[in-house]
Image 1 (tube, one colour):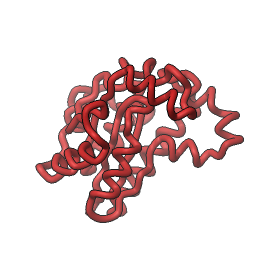
Image 2 (cartoon, one colour):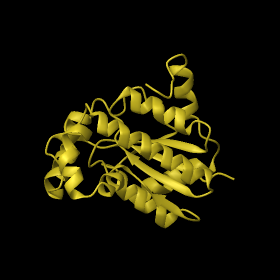
Image 3 (cartoon, rainbow, N blue to C red):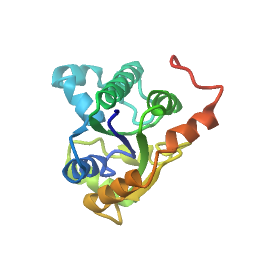
Image 4 (cartoon, rainbow, N blue to C red):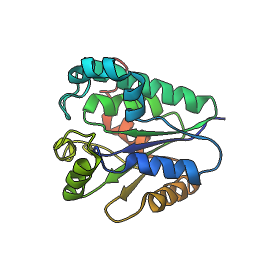
Length: 196
């Protein structure tokens, strides 16, 4: 039996990792938090610094190294789920091809697609407070990250705690099968390929 996949999609600093940690604490069984930041850390600081411009140097136009990293992240998350382990993937889907690859990679799994929203002024404040983010990154991602997405559930971190958001997501999972990636596959039919 496959594990559950929860893909949290939102801008940088929207609160995705906090929700992921809350899902780990509140969900039954093992939940691996395997998001974009975790994969960036796997590169190690020297390699990340060298490759950053080719990964996500522009917050809405990733380079070829970014595409390679995302494809590996999706394949790993799908393999984790197929092994029977639950996985939370926190992500910033800034391109149509990343959305296509997610649909292709997750539509045949019990994968819930969750939109994580937050007010721009709060995103700006969180970037300043964190000190490890490019200022203005979330603002630039704000209008593209949710484009053409069909979500199973949406949360707003300006209005709810990570724990409340995690509880809502777990209730959504318990209430029935996911539809987001399947609906997106239907909308993208004819344009879905593994190579684009």
